[in-house]
Length: 389
Ligand SMILES: Cc1cc2nc3c(=O)[nH]c(=O)nc-3n(C[C@H](O)[C@H](O)[C@H](O)COP(=O)(O)OP(=O)(O)OC[C@H]3O[C@@H](n4cnc5c(N)ncnc54)[C@H](O)[C@@H]3O)c2cc1C
Picture 1: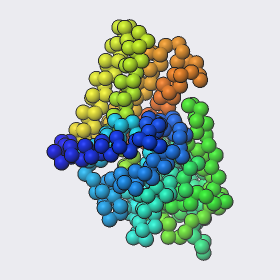
Picture 2: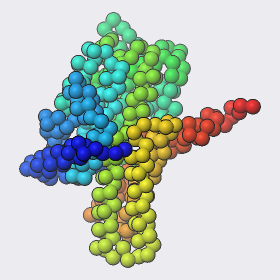
Picture 3: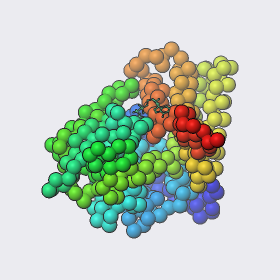
Picture 4: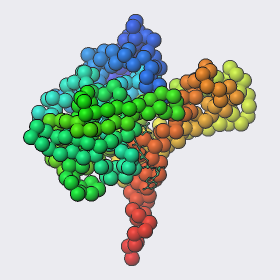
């Protein structure tokens, strides 16, 4: 990926806007709400997100007819890089903006686009993703949540789990079985379900970090309009796969700029505490720096378009493993005090603890390696299947 002089002008515009606007009431938000810290200054981050929207800095990739900027991949990367470089707070709208919005643009009816896209774009309605269930995670096609049509619309019954931000979401996109007796990807539908109704119960799950970023969600006769199905009824698997493919992309490059800030901060800690004089820690810090350079180079090289369909999986493994290792390194740099809860080191503890989730969500490492094995290496899908003669 190369940035043109016009792209660099765009970079200067983003940088100047962020500098001018992360000020006043928003000045204290820098760095708020990172991984494992979603609860931090939530209301202020919501207000900041609305401020971004009013200035046209949400939904950059969406076509202009839907309120976006139709930004090229290069410009999306630039925005995310500058956003992370400025230490702007974690956005609260990512699920709607980056997962549901593009899915609706590709598969939604004109009525669905008109109803649901503007409130996402303007940060009026927040979304969560209701895919995983206790018996269907990596094997998502096993979902057993059911939905049936009665005279007034869809009636949904079942349980979802690990549903990020369900406790603040207004709506959930739910993968449900709508053809009784169907199996695997057949007979599933992609439903848009309002969260604030009597048939929906959200139960937070306390995570390693002590906070609750995700939840259990119970649907007990929950209802939604008959028209709130994306794609044809029974064709939800195709739509859900498109959503899953969106989970990786330009935002990753912003992520790595955030990682760079964390690494720099850790190097500062090593300098001040004297830990940086330890030859083994110096070696590990240098390796971390090299590793991050490699992640960025790979991301820039492959984001422009898939070659064999395995690049996103390689990148997911590279960045999640790198970030986990950074958390472990932080614990080493901080030494014994890092083991005590409730100390100043909490931010590093959270990074270390939340890192465990990064090799699970968005497809676990094993699943990514299965994808690499089949798509990039041409190995059989299942080792028990007979190989081609
Ligand atoms: C922080 C976080 C946020 C999340 N947010 C959401 C959300 O908002 N919405 C949502 O729907 N889901 C969400 N998830 C769920 C996530 O998508 C699943 O956890 C993930 O897909 C793994 O599914 P599982 O937890 O059921 O584990 P399982 O699928 O039961 O896997 C257990 C272990 O077996 C391995 N395994 C499974 N199948 C295979 C195989 N075929 N080959 C080799 N190894 C295998 C896995 O790699 C893993 O190590 C979130 C998860 C986390 C950690």
